[in-house]
Length: 128
Image (cartoon, rainbow, N blue to C red):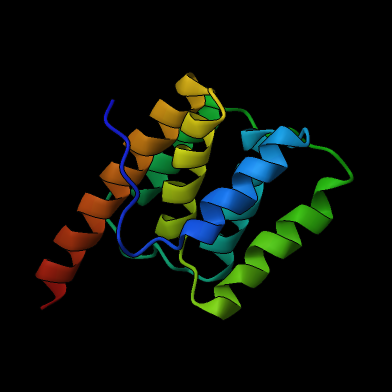
């Protein structure tokens, strides 16, 4: 799969996620924060396939439930205050997984990102 970071996604997110993965945080733990952000901000409400996309991703990459994840989840959710979106986070996490050699995770996250990106465009066109 060809990996290229979207021009809307800040490169520092890839660096952040790469460092977290190298320090032992799994992509599954990071996904918990991304899913939390998406549900907390209702960012994907009204999109046709968003629930199915996340359901597929969470079945393929079960979330590690760890009491220490609460801080990571809150941190990822706080990125919304800086204008970071769920799609940016998914894009950056997929790319970080690719850079770290986690190719299966990278491909699953990338496919989910692409599907949600297409759904966002379709939803925008339908609302206009």
